[in-house]
Length: 252
Length: 232
Image 1 (cartoon, rainbow over the protein chains, first blue to last red):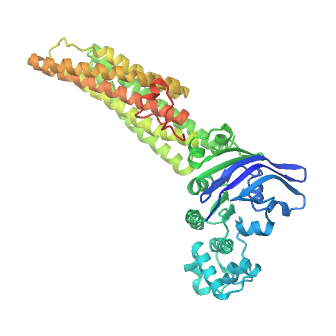
Image 2 (image 1 turned 45 degrees about the vertical axis):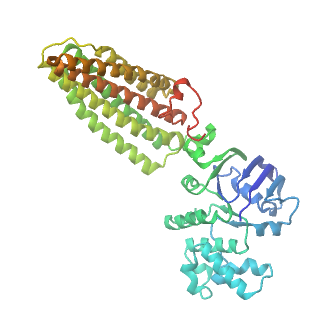
Image 3 (image 1 turned 30 degrees about the vertical axis):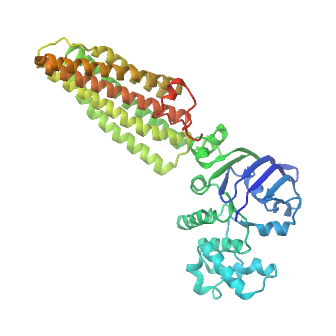
């Protein structure tokens, strides 16, 4: 099941660039939360702080508290353990090109030393079913490579790969921006189904997409979170003029 | 400023709605004037303006529909377009009410004059004041002015109820005046509907400007916080 995320006084830097400033928010569990804002506003940096990916950059630095469930991820846990609990899907689908569909999904488990064949088969099938890809690939699991799938299928394969390690949180950084409208709606339908089991945080430039899939939406601007509220409120009657100006296209 | 073309389209939509508003307001004022001076040539003007109002109603709806489909507006822009669609419909019905009054004036012309216990000019002034004020609120995006319009509706309703009572009594007691009384009753009813449309327009202005849905809530008249307001 998904867990809530509590962020307290989060600050992040790239070198001297103070890219996130004093972020405080509570992301509810088992819901989709969308993050919107113009390019460079800090929303992608923010999600990378939720699974300690930000610190993989040698010039990056983070201060503050991120609590996922009961775990303070910067104090109580190792990055590898956090990334198992917090899966991530990127803008461009990135399946391992030489691996079969099956091995793509099982890769994370195998890396963690998982070797029980029957259990692996079950997890691969479950993950592919949960990512709404099973029916399309079940006959070619070991025959076809991940790279042979269409862009939309590759993205769902990456979601299956993220789900296979049984995360509680799924971070999605513009997961549909490289996809056609049909593949995009499949991903959105998937997000809708997955949020009953996982906490989803999605970064998107597509405001209609945020409005369609998310219960909560946060608006970032210049490294700060300007407004965080129900998606309904943000898109019909935001409290802050800067949010309204951005979502109505008056700047950005 | 980005989306310049979209912002220009919203301005164009507002301008077209103001043309529509001007036609509807003129129609109701002409209908009232036709009643006051019993002038059939003014009734003809009202009938002719209805054709223009109907055409403009379709054009405005089409433009609003195009913007919804093509631009996916958000927040205040979305509320504006939804309000325009609803105000447009109300203005068209104000035009219909003006035509109803003009039709009654035409039939009155063939009847003997009668003194009736109803002050139609006063009721007409109040209803047309409401139309003028709600349109001014729309032009100035002024929710407070729109809230004032909401407070005026009860007076028109009360006048309509009083007219109904007085005119049905005339019909019962002086049956030879029944046609004139019925005519006057229908004019009062048309004016009461004009006031209702002005109220609807005022509610739409408040929704557009403040995001508050104040329909069917008397608390807005006193300015109390509306628990059903959008996003509360």
